[in-house]
Image (tube, rainbow over all chains, first blue to last red; front, side):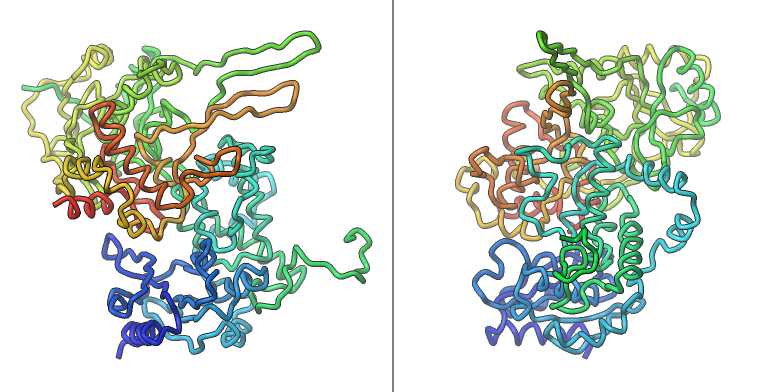
Length: 276
Length: 337
């Protein structure tokens, strides 16, 4: 039986037994190479689920849709390792109760999906341990190295040129499972903390605010990068920040659901006086 | 016999137009994206892409532009109106869907108030479109009563020659004829055949959709929730759209000096309709998607007799979750049968 069929069968069992109220997975898209998020609530519909090498979007963000988990019922979701790490972060930041999430874990090596065993987020702890420090998707690595070799001024010029393309559509934010704020700082208009204008300064403000907010939280799933309609290589900013956080704090985002947020936690006995 | 512009003369054309005082603009590939940008020579033009990634509207309705500067002193408030920098321009290599999009928005910007920001630019711009010989699965102009060689909104339409070495020239407006006078001697009279235009299959029946949308019973249809369940609420579709025209006015600055700006806004955003009280009449993403479709295919045609869509397909092409107008209207077409 193909892995796709196995997962359909499992999804069907979960829905038929009432263990979950919904399965969030992938179905065919508008072109042969596209997959789209699918929300399945009846056992008959599991046949529309697709699982193949084109299933790359991180679907974990849908779990924090307002009201979805508020009835205490469970939801199953197809997740790659980065998505599973995202569940850990969402649980650590009290955005969801991980017990309500049934994980249909898979990985995509090359073009073929492989099954990951486990169904609760903690089942994948060992796997996540082995991934520590490994860049999940090395797309853009050549450019990354080039950027690292640049002088600060050259690097600034590169990002200025990239950010000048930004249209502030916020697709990066909306596609990001970590951008769950009900009201983003840039949408706060009483007062308007951050200008809405999409000029050079405004675009820098937006992209830098986001990069900092994601430091130590980004799981590098690439959703933002793929969502960007003007092709800004957003993943490279986050890759840089993830590397810095790993080096400075030995923090690999999403390692467990009890992991303390690196930028939002402190200890009373911290030797550094500026903390408190 | 028709007028023909050969590709090898294009560089001279750009030069002539520039020395005649026109800024020359066209599709330019830069930093991994193609957009309409100023060009220095024909070599800067990227004319092989099906259509530029970004629409033409930003040349007439930029994503952000100043409207007024203000300064407040002890005994005086000074305001200074900012009007767009003008000067004659020629856009070479627009796609017919982009040019049509501008014509679709003209009545909107000139309806109760004539928007200077839009019309000052419109009146100074010559649009030279190139008929499409290539299309992709997202193109849908033919479903909107347009076509790969629509003349709507264009001052000149060029039809690529079969040989690939130039274009047949069809001058459509006085403004177009005037601009082509400057390059008259670079044109050749010839009988070379034009390449066939792209075949774009009709994907939905826009009239039937509009009728379904006009039926008040369908406003609360379950369909809206089903079709938009995966929408993540970004503004990619609206900002890439050549006809979406909503904007917000913001003051930037401090208490004493600042600038008033006109910025793009999107009906996809929750904040778009948020009231000061905190109440939001479009509190769900499905209500926001319904608004976008209703606006384009019901309210807009009701007022201006044309759909607010030229079928470029950018909404679907770039949607992070594979949504878009095509599928929604295909489903509505089915429902309306």
